[in-house]
Image 1 (tube, rainbow, N blue to C red):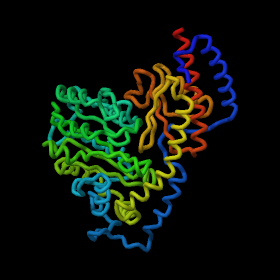
Image 2 (image 1 turned 135 degrees about the vertical axis):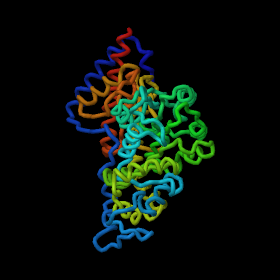
Image 3 (image 1 turned 180 degrees about the vertical axis):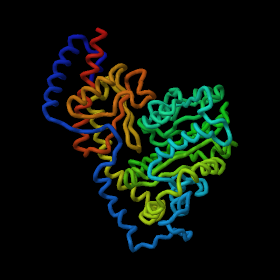
Image 4 (image 1 turned 120 degrees about the vertical axis):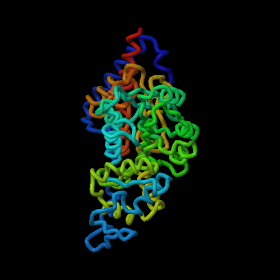
Amino acid sequence: MKAYQELSKEELLTLKAELNAAYEDAKGKGLKLDMSRGKPAVNQLDMTMDYLDVVNSQSAMKAEDGMDVRNYGGLDGIPEAKKLIADILEVKPENVIVCGNASLTIMYDTVSRAMTHGILGNTPWCKLDHVKFLCPVPGYDRHFGITEHFGIEMINVPMTPEGPDMDMVEKLVSEDPAIKGIWCVPKYSNPQGYSYSDETVRRFAALQPAAPDFRIFWDNAYAIHHLYDDRQDQLLEILSECEKAGHPDMVFEFCSTSKVTFAGAGIAAIASSKANLDDMRKSMTIQTIGYDKINQLRHVRYFKDINGVREHMKKHAAIMRPKFEAVLQVLENELGGLGIGTWTKPNGGYFISFDALEGCAKAIVAKCKEAGVTLTGAGATFPYKKDPKDSNIRIAPSFPTPEEMAMATDLFVLCVKMVSVDKLLENR
């Protein structure tokens, strides 16, 4: 198949007419499909309904240490929930605090505490002239929303298949004490689906930041979200690597079961050093009397242990895998060799990242929406919603059916072709 850049102006004009006709036909189908967010599909939620039955009015309501989960207490979470999360993250239970239902809340609270009270006795960020965060891009829009909300300056750091550009990270954090953190989705990253290499993790652990209160915000959201049994990315455990490197306090690690059980009704946790967690508890004792221990108990009794979680995630993978494969098949069949787009092929997570020709992403997203397919807004994967190349588009295959995903992707590639032809014609 001939690359579009190799076509003559006359060939491009002929192609444009054909694509426009196909687009008008597609609009007449009345599609209403949403690929904008990584929401679990209804059948993923349905398969977990029996989770609601494991704790009822007849259940023993005591944790393994004798704590009555209906009452106050247990600020850190019940012991068996701490162990379950620890096994998911491959850390020690004593390094875990189990909180409420969303890791995003914990991340927000962690930044908020640093702003108002500082970290481990350091100056509260709100009293500083400048506070900056490094943001691997493309990245997770909700991370960027938190730092923007607090007025923190965000600095783009390019992502690679091995993780963030570590030469750039090392240079920036070592030279600028105003840089207080970096957002990371280290496994099956949002949106590219990349997993950090061992070398990248070790270089993170060995960072020499100019700011003593610099922290790595390690959002391990997709730690167990594999798509394949035989192709699973492995991630080096960051807390132990930081301890080996003599920087035990440099990481805040986050996770939740929001896409394992029910969104809004999972359990979320933070893992970090003893010093960081002790510092966090000072605020927690004022902020809350304790989180939902009944929900923690429900999770543990449903999964029993890490093996139960893994078996459950295989069921999720069986639902997710055909959707990812449907998207990738259409992309390869329709765009392979045309030179107008590249895309990632992740082994897990919730997203596929697509890069169009420069200056095309916003137009592609708009064309898709006009014809009934909603995508994540162009620019959303960059701080301040400003993609400097106007190129990246995040595809979220999870919610529609595989058949709907194929239809949506057919329309998507049609829009990619249309906008790309227009862009190429501008230069002829």
